[in-house]
Image (cartoon, rainbow, N blue to C red; front, side, top):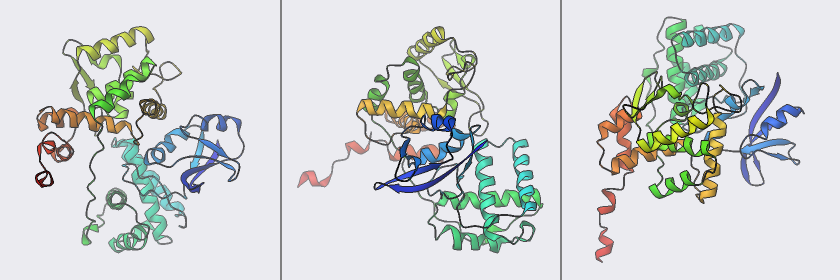
Length: 372
């Protein structure tokens, strides 16, 4: 399998993700399918738009096509999948590689999600590289304190990065060495509170109306109409549509939880018409090969093209549609407890964030400036 490396560069004043590999016709054809990919003759490589979404999509995009080396990338965002390993660190010992592989296999047997496994093993590898040549069996809480103070903070890595590194190390030592790494002896960072990005109903309508392709329009419509995550949409099967009860059943979503969401007659009719025409074999939305799941990268590309045609210049992601669904429900008077169930949130505190972006009450507030 070919080797591909990724790093961040500034090209013509714009931050880009540089993709480098030896000439290969198949890889060139593949990279052309990534939204916004361009070749630069000056820096002699392909490059992609720099964004949190694109960083997160790289491993899946090259899976099965090439071995991706992203050792020179540093993940500074709040993405739940902090996979990027920085450069300048020594390699870990062969013994610790075996320990990490054992840890990975244990997480797989415990049915941790693929993204969590990648995040935790990547974090753990980064931590062990930092403390090298000290081996993992000799590590104590002081090493984690040093990792945070000498590595995480100077590089201005995120709150999420720091917390996940701590959580990964705690779980690793509890499983591999049957001991607890006492990392509670130092303070965790103050959490950064960011508001969800929300579109207006008018913007959502424009996005859903512009796609000409029936499949593209229906995929975006279901995400908004049912508040689904990207993976939940792509995992939908015809049997998940309960027409008599007017429900969509979401199987094994985040946290391996099932849930149900209501579906209107209008949307059910659109789904039935689509299924009748395309006759999917396994998933409702399949890729070029029948029976294979539609590509997550292609779905994001569908949204970007819809936003372009709709004249929306915001950096919209698929999750914005889910945020918009929840906020619009709240503004229409739906109880927050019901919204929590529809979104599949374990805690009501997660759902309460939408109260901070709802404009229903805020728009009724009159500024004292208007009385001057």
